[in-house]
Structure formats: C-alpha cells, structure tokens
Length: 268
Image 1 (tube, rainbow, N blue to C red):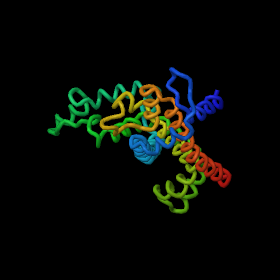
Image 2 (image 1 turned 60 degrees about the vertical axis):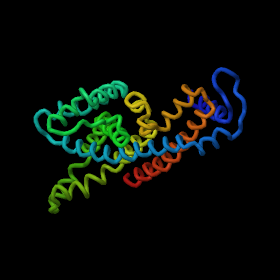
Image 3 (image 1 turned 135 degrees about the vertical axis):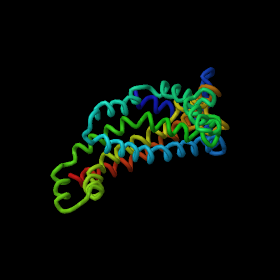
Image 4 (image 1 turned 90 degrees about the vertical axis):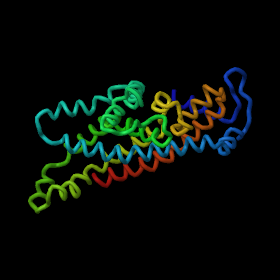
C-alpha cells in the first residue's frame, strides 16, 4: 500500500501520461521542465514561507499556552478542551469557517476593524496578506494538538528537580530556563519535526480558501501537483513534483530524526 504507489509514481515521473492514453517514456524531460518553470519555483518559495512562518510561531505559542494551562485554576480542564477543540474538525471545515471570518463584507474580523474606525482588510485577496492569513488559521487549528504534547511533557518534569532549584535560590524564570526547557527538548524536537513536515504538504487551506491565488501567492508544491495531475492532465509532471517533494521530506526528516534519537540517548 505504500511502496507500490511510490514505485509507480517514480516510473510515471519519467513518462508522459494524461490518463487517456498509454504512458510514453520521456526520460528526464519532466524534471528539466520543472527546473525551468517559474511557477514551480514560486510554489517552492510559498511552501517554505508557509512552513518557516508557521512552525516557529506555532511552537512558541503552543508551549506558552501549555505552560499557562499547566497551572491549577478553576475551569482549567474546560479551557484545555476549548483550546484542543479545533483539532477535532477537519481542515476543510476550519477553512470554510475562516473564509467566512476573513470575508471583506460580512466577516467578523472586518466588522470589528470597521467598528474601530479602520478600513476593510482584504485578507485573502491581497497577495501580501493571503499567506499570513493562512498561516494564522493553520496555527489556530493545530495549536491544541501540540499544546497537549507540551502539556504532557511539562507534567512529566520531575518536581524534585524544580524543588531543588528553588532551594538553591533559582527564581521562576531560572527554573523554567535551566530545568524545564532542557527536559522539554524531546517533546520540542517532535513538535518541530511533525509540524514542519505537515506544513510542507499543505494543500487544503490553499485549495479551499484562495484557490492558490491571488496571483499564485498561496500556491504550494502539493497544490502544484494537483494542478498538473487533475487540471492539466499531466500525471508525468505531477509525479515528478511528488518525487521531488518526497526527497525533500526525506532530506529534512532523516537528520532531524537522527538528532532526536541522539538527544533521547543522551537524556537517558
């Protein structure tokens, strides 16, 4: 179920195939045409923009929320559920909801902005705001899942270490920096790897909310695969893009996984 489709995709990447006629071999033509295709490079740039814009901000936010919700106060369990709740909805549903929220005429965000005396903001149709808008929505949707991971890691930090640091005169920030953060390293590595690899494969938000626009501002690598395969009926070129994405994911994932395993061994 995994290896066979991968091998088929590799084979198709060296062929011309429109799903209507038999595949014909074209050698490396699909790959060479990609490297001279400005739209492909735009998709790569947008994908990196989305990934590098989302992961650092999202990781820090998830950690901050986890630290806040690791405290004991009335209703903390309800707040945890509320933060996690968006994770239970699919990206299609969340994308539709946020498309309404970003609407320039009836969207709640613009109604608030106009109520405060501001001008209408075209979140999804302004090429400079479209991708940041998708990043903000994606962080909101994924926040709960990664918050739970950090929360679990925070609750596994030995209290004896924190108490010993307090006895030695460390304040709250020093205890967090020198005791808690090092203990969170495995969880942080997992969050960064998982979030980044997921971001590299972003498609639904762009497809549902912007259609890859405006002016290709939100077109990603996976969206480009969809265009070539199902709009242009060029499965050979789409497969070539998919193979390159697979290689890129391996190049990112394997070193990070090795670093994570090395850190785990050192911690033990």
